[in-house]
Image (cartoon, rainbow, N blue to C red; front, side, top):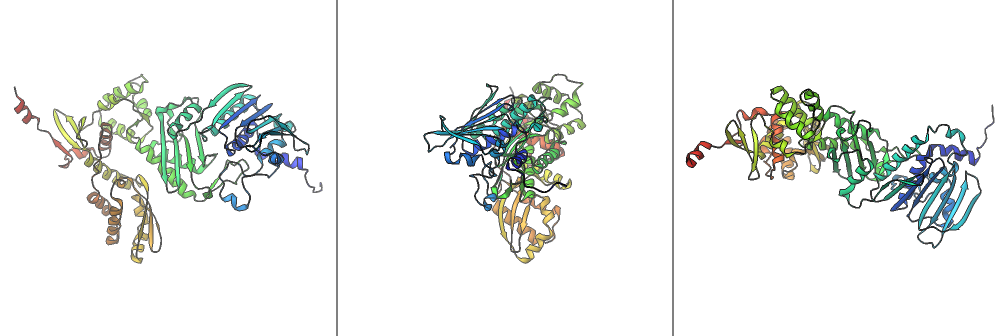
Length: 582
């Protein structure tokens, strides 16, 4: 047996470098993150032979002082943290002090930098992790350039695992795309073998971020992209859902997760997205997304792996619930703007070969006559794989079993036509009725209704605490998610159909009702909602009218057999004709 001995610094450095620097794209990632931490606004990247011959990253960040250059390429030297407690509040990409040291250990590296406080730049050169370094003055603008030559020259075995140059270049390109999609305010220029391959111009306005998405993935049709923007307390979710129709069949699924602008691999977020898609669409296979989750840095642990691509959430259940409900809510909101492409193509492929979505949808809807097919259609409109309707003509040709919407009249009413009869429908009341049916449907199918975040603190007695404790699961079925303490409870979410009500008054009244009843049943809560919720008097447009009529057709089509007096009123055309008779 060999005796135990200390490894040389050169060997231990190469072993450590293997965890951080796996291939050329790993070098690109680490150098780009350093440039971003240096607050660079312009970054130039150049590779030769897919990074195996040379990698150069140049930025205009704040630079490095001369006396800190040797420290910058030393192991466990960093400006990002100073004490153990700093690990709980990391707001930079780098913090371990391993990136440059790991790159140095497996390449011939030159670092050139000019700080904002200096009139002259300095360069330091190192081959492997030898103690021989060369420091000398050089001309260079403010910022830093790092040149990495002959990667893995001193570890030939690593080169054997490099498949081919094309594969390595694609990995570099993907790494740059990931960085470009999380740092919108930076100009990035990427050269391949001294020729400009791609450039990403800085985005200065938040509304224009989607243009960076289009630049990065030019295969995407923006008509099939749904923007996500949700907030709960100090957690925000932003990003895009990309529907299958916008991607070519040869283009792989895009599934990018960012937490505090850092690209991560996180199964918790992916699982929340997949399950919300499954709830609406019925499958997870065609799920593509780019999501940005932002939360306080002390709520996550990124010191999991040297590459910093893995994280842990301190409150994983809250994160899962927030992402799941945000995606679910956004998918449901777009039910009128999107319609099932797969449903149409599958059901009617023998009737229509034309793939133009506008003409295809108009023709197919006119061909659907049977009650079974119409029911299937409305189900898909509300809850299936989705693509956008760009044509108002399609909406205006849409004919429901109870008539056709002609115009919106005086903000709140729709003029309907059916079998030579004109009627006026009250959209606000129709919405209230639909919400009641949707609530009953959700409860019946053990689904939590669509919710939104709301902060509500309510002080309670011991008896009231006991009543709530016995009914927490029942209240959650309606979307009331609350934290129960001894002398108060904190309400976190409520059903979304309460959003536009006078919530302070309504919620106080609701919980007073709960405490009065003591023993609560589902039917009691539903009845309370029916009698208490006020009708919302918002202005309606034609598309809103179509949306609510679609929901009526799906959830409660029988309501028009005996409609409530204030929902639908026929217009007596005969009286008008008698007056106008020539």
